[in-house]
Length: 219
Image (cartoon, rainbow, N blue to C red; front, side, top):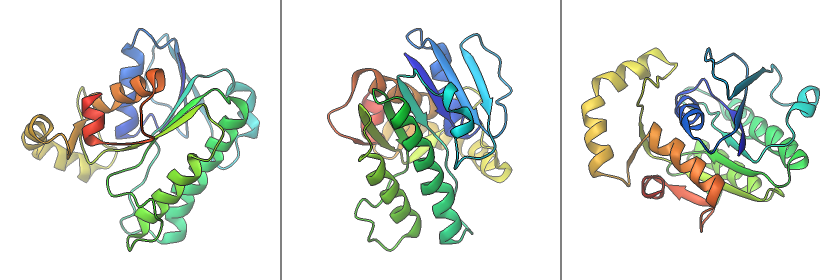
């Protein structure tokens, strides 16, 4: 399986990249990002691309792939609705519509979050935007598309948040996260389990297009 990964430098993307690189069934990984990952591996190739609303300049390098793991995401804290929509909806759809046209046999997996609002009518701005993004992705002519909605994520194997204060919190609460990952599968998963589940779904499919933390852990 040949994979394209968006967001490989973020916490979720780091975990997914690790699992892709150690999975013997994955032949190659193309990371598309605004900055290099800093990693070197025989299976890994990287494209540093500045404009995430227009991929026309690199279209020729985005063909021939079996799966896309889209792990880009930002927090809505302190962000106005227009900016959040641009970074969440516009950028995701620009990448996805390009890939659907170039790779109609592709499986597209998108990481959203628990409480995403599929009705697009709820009171939380971020949840409505995420819900609209999911709904529009599911309309694209991919072989299949899956929406991953983890709740809490415990970073493992050196995976770190790029935000210093968030990483500090993860360090402090690491024992609690480890306990919850073992005892509360509805509310906590790990970066390792998330990456493995995304690979398995891309390879083997899943009965439903939306997966929560319990589904992720079961896979």
